[in-house]
Every structure is written in structure tokens, then in C-alpha cells.
Amino acid sequence: MQKFLIELEHEPVKEACNIAVKTLLSQGSHFLTNADWGCKDNDHRCWIVVEVDNRDEALAILPAIYKNEAKIIQLTRFTLDDFQKAKNHK
Image 1 (cartoon, rainbow, N blue to C red):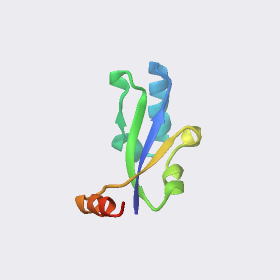
Image 2 (image 1 turned 135 degrees about the vertical axis):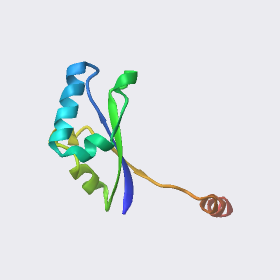
Image 3 (image 1 turned 30 degrees about the horizontal axis):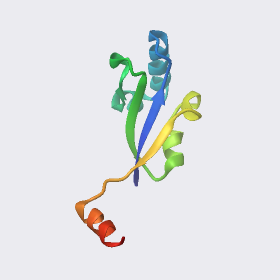
């Protein structure tokens, strides 16, 4: 499994926040209850980290309305050993 950060953005108005919540809830409560939202700080985006096999599976989680605009970032956690190996291969 790979880990991906999914970022969704919506218009900076209350109605858009409500539509985003309603749309995501229609996909099931998992996305909605596990996402972190920036709306209260006037950053109208939400983020969720998912573990799936690939980027296409991460995209499949989203409602159709967000698929073209979603930002999906593969996350990698490096260890100190990884950095040492990279340093030695210069």
C-alpha cells in the first residue's frame, strides 16, 4: 500500500463549504470524518491521508465533481538511513 495526501479546494464562501460537506458526505462518512478542514482559518481546503495501492485508487475515492481539481500527492517517509545512503551515493 502507498500513502497519498488528497487535497480539495472550494470557494471561500459558506455556501461552498456546505456544498463540499454535503457532497463528500454523499460518498459516505469516511472521507468527511477523516478529513482536516481549513475553513475556520479562511483556507477553504480539506485534506485527507489515505492508504491505497495507487494514485488511481486515491482518485476513485472522490466524488466526480472534485476529480479534475483534486491534488493527490504520494507521501514517503524517509529514515535517517535513507538520507545516509543518498549522501554516500553522490
